Image 1: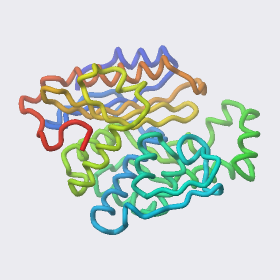
Image 2: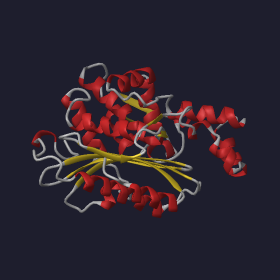
Image 3: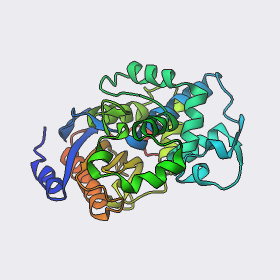
Length: 307
């Protein structure tokens, strides 16, 4: 493994703990920092979730055009349908788009109910993601937090949250890798490599996940670190004290590199543009350490992040 100790020290200076892994999709060469240390996945878990949805859709186990009415009781707050004021009706496949493109928590919650949490657990085992832990949907995780602090609903929790000490917040189950959806940077790049080589399921399912990841609207982490001609398809994840991103950088002359940057910060601040930039820079440095490792060009049928 290439020495990336300088990158690790940069994150320490920012008050953050780094878990980093990159691998060449085509030849398997790897590099990283703490790639096997467990970390909270946050919304990165939506990648295996949407993959399971896509697999079931391709196999005819569900209709991707099935209509779903998202009501007020379904909303969890945040972006997409999760923050809408009125009822929203859309297809399952559009909910999958919202889950990956804008990290819609309610869309993810609906998909978890439809495909089954246990099925997502079975998927990560099937793919050999031995260190990945699927605890539950966004709503299930929220209910665990509410029970922990004695809140009777999201509104009362929102009022209570500002009164919690940083130590109390860090003790919440959603920030504990042993009690929430978690995994390692190495597992995440394995998942991405399987997706980009059509080995995570039927080719059509893998292609759909790649295409939806390429439509993520947030570009401030990995995508911002690469030149315009490099295609980046990614999925971020953010919680208080957690900032993550996983993705694949595909170079125009050939070469596809899966990278996962998972971080834990001492500060609970929500706005950390310095850390967002550092995540992108770390991902690019890890990828650059692997450039030239593989003499064979990428397969045209699965190159890039689009269908």
